[in-house]
Length: 150
Image (spheres, rainbow, N blue to C red):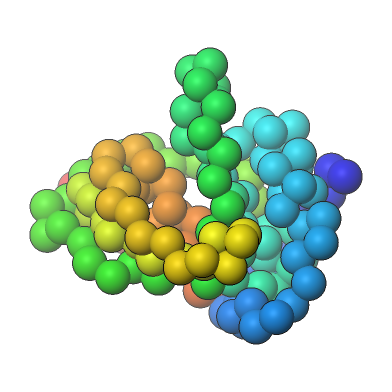
């Protein structure tokens, strides 16, 4: 089911989300993907649809014709590069306003998969920026909070 996306300055976008501890995710992930694809976006965090749990979904390649949907429960960055990349980022919760944001060139992310298994993967380039952007949402942080790089 497609859900409504909260828009800035909704105060819920500034809340730190709670870890998923046995919470039922029935239908949530499917709803998040449907909402993200119809928006159309490449990532969506649960707080953007008013669910204050540490969950986000991404599909960084679908607009290029290659579907790669991924769901992340309780994600954490375990390591990141000191090298920085600067990208123009947009946000489904901040319509018609993009911003240049500096992010690590790569991040090592750990999370719980939908089957309950702990996962780890290195993301680089655009995928790293995307997971960092969505992780920011789980901590109540928006692209507007990042200083504009020179």
